[in-house]
Amino acid sequence: MIPALAFLFLTYLAAAVPFGLVLTMLYGGEADIRQEGSGNIGATNVVRVYGWAMAAPVLALDVGKGLLPVLLARVAFPDLGTWWLGLTALVAFLGHVYPVYLAFHGGKGVATGAGAMLGLAPAPTAGAAVVWGLVLVVTGRSSLASLTATAALVGLALLLQPDALGVATVLALGILQSHVGNIRRLIAGDEQAILRPVRWGRSDRSAAPDPAEVLAMGPAGTAAPEAWRTTTDDASSPESP
Image (cartoon, rainbow, N blue to C red; front, side, top):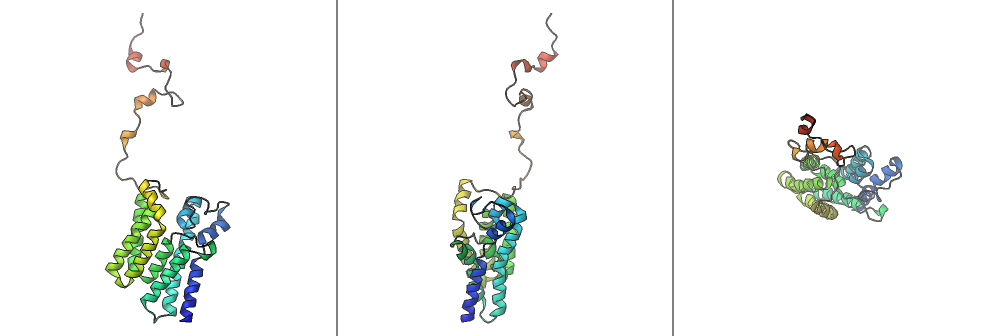
């Protein structure tokens, strides 16, 4: 029992490392991601402040600190079963969301939770990752993609791996709680996109300016002087004698 408790404690400490903050402070610049963008330490806010080149390793490390503890728990304690892996996954999630190093103010837990579930239930998690990617590409909003993928994870766990359904449900509730502010912004239409969303079909030409109106404008985009406004009929008519 003591080795298992020590393992959980180390899992929490490892998952609590705020890689988003650490990497941006070491290699990013002067902007503190806790003071910029959404103020979150996760990969999504790193995208907003520093771009994808910096966010990609942050995302990989956040996924890894959920995945590796679950894989190690499987190897180190093979007789404890799925409940043990689920407990490890939840501890890793809590470590990221409530890190002791930052006075328990951490990230949203999506990447770390996804990594933990990847070690526990690979097939449902892979399916949820596809849903996340599709929603992100279509809408450009990471929060909406995360919430949709979390719901998909619960459904896929029910269908493909019922023994992981309890952990998936608890993680879903945790992610829902950490995204309350995002949900409010989504409802209000104020949620910031991190990708340019896909536009389906032809572009709307009805909003394009009328060519005649453009020709009637002056160089600065303001109404042209009266002397400039010569209609076709005026230009083609002979001058008065």
